[in-house]
Structure formats: structure tokens, C-alpha cells
Image: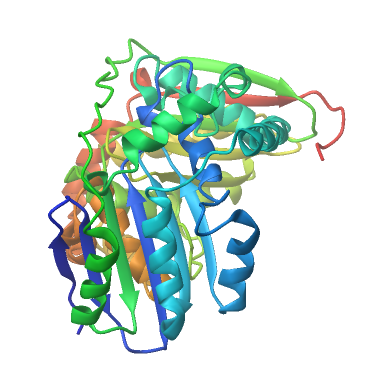
Length: 429
């Protein structure tokens, strides 16, 4: 069976199942429609903190046994919080998947949020935040987001602002959990070595009795049009300068996303949309690498965008050259963008960019964990057909499409240009 079975339980839980009998493994992902975009001022970082608390146990699965139980059965597990979603996964030997099934059904409802564990995790997350603040690219990236999004909740980093990490209460964390961790706000996706009918029956046993909750209210704060180019500078320790250039980018569900993916491949080398990578494709044939790196304007250049519910950013990142100012690299980038906007793109170059983007996508979709990831991930901003049609839709992109999206999105007046200026106090640990 190569297709996907989709069922929605009476309580609103969407279940996606894909049989893959190539190895005796099953990967389970449960996705909740909650992330940093759902956080009001005063509670930034709360979604990520709730994710941490989900590993602190329930009466049935105390924290002290969870890691050992998964590892003992030969499995791996983790969780991630993003701007638009939070997800938890387990990849297990097929015969041991019931442990993961029971665990996720249980912690949808029964996580304890012990006050001592809340305070312990506050220390952990504050330490995580402090560690990130020692990273030049985090400092620059946070400043870029704050400048690009003054109104929309994409304004703040997933980890949250220090002021909120110091003051969020146990009661606020638990209320956030109870508001968003509902079956009708979740997608359960499994891929691997199982029989669909049997798996669906077991999922019904575990989840059907969990009542639906009220639909969570969503923050509706669309970002107004930017009135002109924004420039900013961040200073900090280190020896290396960086420059980030961010342009407005379409949402993942926008048809322009596919043309932008081809443009990305042509300009900076194909981006991997999958969190787990898989396969590496050099960007040395891309236009910007040849112009900027081969031309010794910068040490490296990378580009890419995230797949998001609302319009976000397409960013270029430049690593400073020891002898050339980053403004020269920016001028070269601008020249390449103007050339793309004003001169016809050859069909052969677009064909090569499509081929590379298709290869990168395929590399990041091949194993069982990645297959299960895509089942649920695509549902967070579109639906599973977005994934299954992705390669075909890339192939339909024309040279005219590439030029059109370059003209539409790479506008100086709506970009943010940020520079990290090292103080020369030594590289950060």
C-alpha cells in the first residue's frame, strides 16, 4: 500500500496512516496546532515550555521511566516546537509501537505539571535562552524577526522573551496545555509496518473516549505592509561578521511557494524542507555562490524559507570575508537579483534548478520516520496532497514563473537587512 488512509474520529482527531512494509519499523507523530504564533504578550515561549513539560510524566508514565522505556524497546523519540505547531514523535520496532501509542494518548490528557518540575524546567529553558544569546546568528535572527514583524506574532522567537520566561506561572502553562492539547486540535500520523485496519482499531480504543474541547481562539494580527527598507546592526563578541537579508515570502499553501522553491534552487542552492535532512546537494553551481563566494565577496552564502501558515520570510545569509566588506557582497547580491528580475532565465537553468530541488526533496522524504513526518507536517499548513503533489508542481514551474516571483518578492522596499558586527573579543563558546 503506497497511499494514505485518512480518518477523522468523532472527537475531531484526524488520523493519517500509511503502510510501508520495507522494514519492521513504525514511526508515530502527533501534531498539535499550537506554536509561538498563538502566544500573547506576556506568555511568549509558553508553547515550547509546555512541550518540555510533556516529558515530565503522567501517573501512568512517570518521568523516571519514560526515557528508559523507549530506549529499552529500541526506539527513539523527540519533540519540536515551531511558530505554527508542536509535534512529538516515536520511531519504534513495529512489535513495540503500542508503548508509543499508549504514551501519546495518555499525555494528551494526563500530564501533571508538577510545580517543582515547572520551576526546574524554568531554569533549564532560561539557560537555553542564555546559551542562544551567545550565538551571533541567534542574536541577528531575533533582531531580524522583531524588525520584520511588528504586529504579527511571528515577531518573537519560539523560545520566548526572557521577561516572560521569568514570570510565566504553572497555572498559565497548564491552561495553555488544556486549551490546545485537544483531539480536535491534533493530527495523529503513523507510517510503517502495520495493517491499517488493526492500527485504526487500536487508535480508536485509545483516543475515542477523549472528549473534544472548544476550538482555541487564534490571534488574528496580520502584518501591515512595510513602509520601506529596514537596516539594523547587532554587536557582539567574535571575529566573524554576518549579514542577513530578509524578504517577504508567501505562505506554504500559496501557489507561488513552488516557483519560489525553484528560484531558491537557482539562486542559492536547493533548501531542505524536512527537519531531518537526508542527502546533501552542493550549492556551488548556484548563481549567488559563483558571484559571491567564487568572487571572494563573502566566505559563504545560503538562502531559504520556512513553510508557514502565514507569510513569513525568505532570507539570505552571508558570512563575512576577511578582506572584503559585506556591503560589497550585498551589492553583488542586489546585482544578481536585478539580473534575474530583468533578464530572461534560460529553460536549461530552470530545468537544472528543478532537478536539484526535486532531488533534495526526495532525499528528505525517503525513510519511514520522514514519511510519517510529512503525513502530519503537510496538514499543519495545507494537507497531505501538498506533499504528494510537490514534485509534480515543481516540474510545472516555468522560466516566466521564476522571473515573476523574483520581481514580486525581492523588493528592496520591503526587506530587512541586518549585520552582525563582531567586537573582536574572541569567538563565543
